[in-house]
Amino acid sequence: MADLQSTEAATWRDYKELTKPNVVLLMILTSAIGMFMAVPGMVPLDVLILGNLGIALSAGAAAAVNHLVDQRIDLQMARTHNRPIATGRLSNTQATVFAMIMGGLGMTILMVFVNPLTAWLTLASLLGYAFVYTMFLKRATPQNIVIGGLAGAAPPLLGWTAVTGEIHGHALLLVLIIFAWTPPHFWALAIHRREEYAAVGIPMLPVTHGVAFTKLQILLYTIIMFLITLLPYATRMSGPLYLLGAVVLGLGFLYWAVELMRGKNANAPMETFKYSITYLMALFVVMLVDHYLFPVSTL
Image (spheres, rainbow, N blue to C red):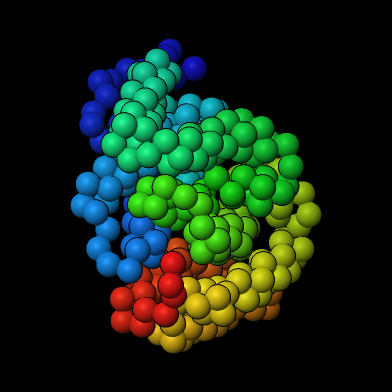
């Protein structure tokens, strides 16, 4: 489709948009913090730079595949209709070559300069998002974001293994936090975009089960997520500053989940979505600060 539509030369901004830079930046934040949480002191500079570079390149490649697969529905949705492949500013061939170069370079960096475990876990995450979620789950089940969310939750584990070369229970706990956060985060956006998802035949939960049911699920998942975020303190991974931050930030998320349930604020879905992004960033930053101010764990 896009090969026939292209009428203007692609710019570097189009390639940048192809990588979903805002999403990748959030992933790299959690990846970098995963690295710092894995050690009591400073992360080796080469691992910090090359590890996050390899993870970022791989994530960008997965995002490019997402653009390729979703170009038809992207063109029909207000949020995505101006994406570079959907509009024809980038051809399928250009995007495919770009994704292959990004993914290949990212994997090479991780395999050669970091460690094979991180490289293989990153590849699994890339394939999980780009192919299992985007090509199958997204169109197959309203539980798409729950099952597929595991791929997006991997960055802190990748950061941890980049430093240590092994999988640790605390690293899996960081994954669990993001895994539980993903459904209420994305379903809030799905409520706001319900009509668009319905028009393009994507079975998001608000489309298949209704808005009221989705709001209830958001509240329940938010409660589960809140309880999970207390586990780093309970397992002596984190200290009192993190506990305070997790409680305050979690109560904020619960407020918006309840506000959604009340149904009196038309802007609540997007406000919840926006808060969820701030929430995750703040939670991990507080965790990092606590790690150095109140070192309680013996890894």
